[in-house]
Amino acid sequence: MNLLQLIHGTNIRRINEMSNKLAKDYLDEIDDFNLVKLNLKEHTIEALVDEAQILPMFSERKVIVVTDAFVFTGQKVRAEVKHNIDLLVEYLENKNDDTLIIFEVYSEKLDKRKKITKLMGKHGIVHEVKPMGENELKKFASEVFLENDIQITPNALNRLIAKTGVDYETVMNEIDKLVLYGDRELHIDDIEDVVSDSLDSNVFKLSELIIAGKKLEAVQLVRHLILQKEEPIKLLALITRQFRLMYQVKLLSSKGFDQAYIARTIKSHPYPVQLASRSVSGVSVDSLFKKIVKCRDIDYQMKSSYLDHQTLFETFILEV
Image (tube, rainbow, N blue to C red; front, side):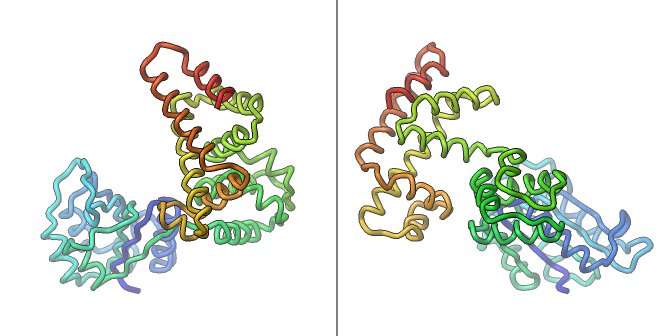
């Protein structure tokens, strides 16, 4: 195994899982003596290099997991320590110990102009954790259920994804709950009983209710979300974003572009584009544009008046 590994992406849970697998593959058995974790916001490069050269106790091998390894990105991060990057460059160029070092970088992109990033690409292995698509996430979820001797019906699996969105960490958290739920076979009713609707899922549902003219149901959903401590001004921002997505999808699809092209063009995950495309099939571009303008007007009122935000938001739903 290459003793320099770097994993980057925005899904911290998947990065942690991949990091743990690499550590287990190298160590066979993990204990407090052969696995060390250092956070680069709190520990210096000197501490990392020194630790790498200390022989492990009661073990032939050792792993250092370096979390928050922001030095490989262009991000400006407030850290408690200053880093000697030249020392890290020297270490990467001349590594001669048997310690496996795993850098966890919580960023979609690395700064490929940096010398340390180039050296990691030359001397180590760089893994990119990309967001999962709908089908990939369904396949992964099915495998997790099978590993736990649980069968899930296709409709239940579809409902799980619909309620949580295509978000790996959210889906995995809900799967953990379903495994503890105890049933060996999961149906759509089980999903409704156990799985929480994500905020994104509720915002999408709210936008659909508004477009369908189901205003009283939309107001009830807003009141439910406010009882869950969601702020009206935040909900307005999210519904504005949703209408803007729908507007872009409708506009581009009316010009003959497919969903994959639209997702790339507006820099969106394909799944929200797919959902938006279904929702706007019978809605005009002009109607969606007017909803965005109305959102802007209500946002101004919320920020410039002393009127109750919930009342303003509910009035907006009834008028839009």
